[in-house]
Structure formats: structure tokens, C-alpha cells
Amino acid sequence: MNLTPAIVLIAASFSLISCQKYNYTEVIEKSLLFYEAQRSGKLPANNRIPWRGDSMLNDKDGDVDLTGGYFDAGDHVKFNFPLAWAISTLAMGGIDFKSGYTSAGQFDYLLDAVKWGADYFFKCHTGETELYVQVGDATADHNWWDLPERWTDVRPTYKVTAERPGSDIAGETSALFSAASILFRGINDTYSNELLDHAKSLYEFAMAYRGKYSDSVPEATPYYTSNGFADELVWAASWLFRATNDIRYRTDADDLIVEYDLSSATGFSWDSKISGADVNLYETTHEEKYAKRIISFCDDTIDNTPRTPKGLVFIFEWGSLRALSNVIFICLQAARMGINDEKYIDFATSQIDLMLGDWGRSFVCGFGNDPPIRPHHRSSSCPNPPETCGWSFFNSELPNANILYGALVGGPNLLDEYEDVRNDAVKNEVAVDYNAAFQGSIAALKQFSENDDGENGDNGGNGLTFNYQIALGLLMVQVTITFLMQRNR
Ligand SMILES: *[C@@H]1O[C@H](CO)[C@@H](O)[C@H](O)[C@H]1NC(C)=O
Ligand SMILES: *[C@@H]1O[C@H](CO)[C@@H](O)[C@H](O)[C@H]1NC(C)=O
Image (cartoon, rainbow, N blue to C red; front, side, top):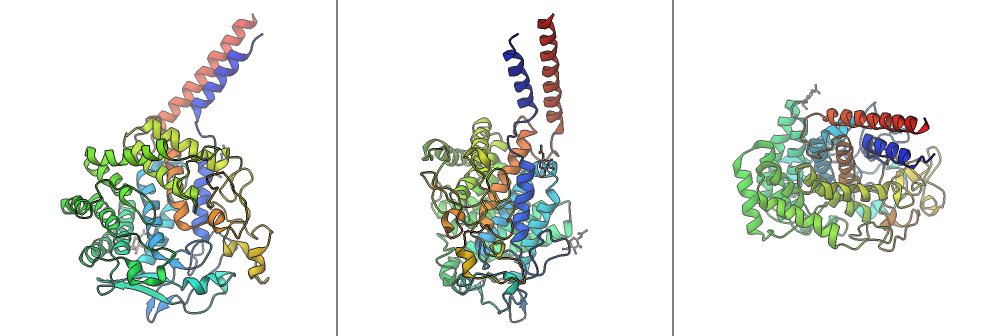
């Protein structure tokens, strides 16, 4: 007898049960482990990374304690500008894709990850017009290949003030505090209010004293030079409007867009926040003008951006998968709000699945088929003590001594060239900013895969739709079996 129709029916019924090709739960879980591996300072008793210990306990400026926070990437500098964006973006994922996190059983770990960042930024915010923005000299740091646990020197610290302003970094830090405040609302209102107070104070500082932090703190250059501060001001205002519903912030956002001629600007990254602000402004106002800007950003990426031979959208080479993940996150936000949901979810799923294995290998350490084993990452590359480390380990072809679970590596170039070699920082570095929108996107896909209509606020997961899908799937299996039995008579 001909089994083809039966097989097609069975396959169709299982695809209805779940459209997850890769285990998104596992990716979220591991990505959060990556953030844990990046922690600096005194680690708590529940640290889950066995090869990490207390480090950089001398991070301070006189009496100001600046321990804690996260290392930037494969190095150990604390670059607050990209870090603050990573935390605001992680928090945004937790707010908008909460049911993706809860159904993965990872929401509490996400809270911990955001709190670990926010608590460090509290320490950095030492006055109404004073904010520490970097700990560690990048040149000294980059001349060293060893465990952070072995670094004992007091590191230089850098701050912005009224005289040497940084409205980009003050705005971004305000944004992270607002986002964290929303995330913790109803979970710990004392903490949430504390976050909001800092967010408001930093916003005033950012608005009153305008300038680029990388002009005030040249030591941030060339690593994280800011391209401008206007987008961070809009981003900060959009977050405060979301957090407080105070119309003043919405007016400020619109005025800033005019003042700095941002009406056709788009972008989402550690240096560019305007499309993230558009998401907040559309979420809170439902005004078409914001939706249009989001659509133009997503459609330009999906329809007009070059692709690699294997189909990855290629935006730029240094950390190509991170650049792509950032856009994907915005498009999934659009989908959540009912904008072009089918197109954007399809796009996001196919691109994320390429990163997780469809390309021919996984680009996430410790996940899936043939994952990278030599990420450009100092502390995981070094052997465990008492063995010593050094440049021979940087240049070695051996795998990193410890698996850096969950880290998204840079990724291939336009020609799909990629090699898992440690000294290629362009393709193999990892960073706190790389995983932020990536992780949020996976949580979004997890949420959508269990919730057909794609438009889900914070209604706690909509397990009902998922159950209907299972029921429908089982019904179709039943129909198939009946059909087969009929034919066999
Ligand atoms: C997906 O990953 C999670 C967490 O690692 C695991 O508990 C679960 O069993 C996995 N699911 C499948 C279908 O393999
Ligand atoms: C809530 O946050 C406050 C302020 O950070 C903290 O002191 C308190 O322990 C937190 N409460 C809980 C239940 O975690």
C-alpha cells in the first residue's frame, strides 16, 4: 500500500505540535550561563560556573567601590557603554518576552543577570552629575593573557561629569535602569523604585550636559567610540515614558528626534538605539509614525541586504551574527505588536536557525552540532589553576580549557568563510553585547512557537493555544491511523 499520504499527515501533525527545530530552552539557559561566566567581582555562593572565582576585587577609585559587573568580551575591561546597552536589551527581552523565559524555566536567571548588572551600575552612579564609565586600561588589559582571578593590580577608572559630559552613556545607563525597573515591578517594588530614581536622575544629567563620553574619556577609544548621543537621549526618554507614563518624556523623545534630525534614522546596537526607542514609543502610543520606522528598518534588512551563499543576512563583518541578531530582535518586537508578524517571525526563525545549526554548524559555544571550541575568550581558554596561562594558550590550537556555554561567536563573513581559531577576534570573539538581543530573540521565538498569533503581551504564556495545537496534532494522528486501517481492510 502507499504510505505517502499517511506520512505527510503525520509529519504535518507534528509540525503543528511545535515549530521549534532547535531547542530554544537550551539556548536561553546556556546564554544565561555565558553571562554568568562574564561576571566580575565577588561571586555569590550560587555561582554556576565551576572554573570562575572572585576577581578584580581591587576595582575602586579611592573609597568608591567599583567591583562587580561584567567583563566586556574575551578581555577583562569593564566597558560600561556596551554593557549598559546589553543589560537594557536583556531587560527588554524579559519584559516583552516574559512568557518565553518562563516557559523555558529561565526567568529567575534572567532577573539575576539583569540585577548583577544594575547593582554594578548603582555603584558607578556616584552623584547627580557623576558616573563611572570604564574600569581598566584596554592596552594594559590586552597585553595580558591570563585568568581574571590572577589580576591583582588596582585598575584605572574613568568617569563623566558636568565638565566632561557623556550624555550617551548617561542616557544609556538611565535606559537600563528604567528597563530594569519595569522588569522588577511587582517582583520587588522597593528595588524597582530604586532603579527608577537612578534612571530619572541620570536622564536629567544626560539632558543638561550634552556631549560624547568618548570625547570626555578618550581611553574608551578606539574600542567603543560613540557615534553620537542623540539616539541614547531618545532611547532613555522612551524608556522613562514606558516606565512612568509621564507625558514629558514622550514630548522630549519627539522633540529630540526633530532637534537632531533623526526622523529617518534607524539602528539597534550598543552604539545605536533609535529602533529600540521606536519599539517603546509604538508600544506606548500605537502611533503609525513609529511603526513605519520599524518597518523600514526590518524590511530594508530582510529585502535589501546582501546574503551569504548559505542565506545569512550580512550586515557587517566584525561580529556579523551579533549585528544580525540585533535587527532580528527589533523585528520580533514588531511581530509581537502585530506588525508584519508572519514575515518577521519567518525571517527570524530561518536566520536564528542558521546560527544554531542550519548553516552547517552551530555558532553557539557548547550548543548543538560542531560548536566553536576555540572562542577568543581569555578566561575559558586558560587551563585551570594551578597550571599557568600565557600567550602560548592564545596561539595554541587546543580547544579552550573550559566550554564557554552559550556564547555566540562573531560568525562568518559575506562569503561564509569561518574558522574556529582563537586569534581571529573578528569571527571568534564573544561579548556581552553579542548575546543580548540574540538571547531576547530566542525567548521571543520560544514564546511565538507556543503561541500561534504572535501577539502576546504579558498574559503569562498563553499555554492554551499550545494545548490546542497538541490536541489538533493528536487528532490528526488519529485520523491518519483510521485512514490506514480503512485502506488495509
Ligand atoms: C531542551 O533543553 C532543555 C534544557 O537543556 C532540556 O531540559 C529539554 O529536555 C530539552 N528538550 C528536548 C526536546 O530535547
Ligand atoms: C528587594 O530589594 C531591596 C532593595 O534592593 C532589598 O533590600 C530586598 O532584600 C529585596 N527583597 C527581596 C525579597 O528580594
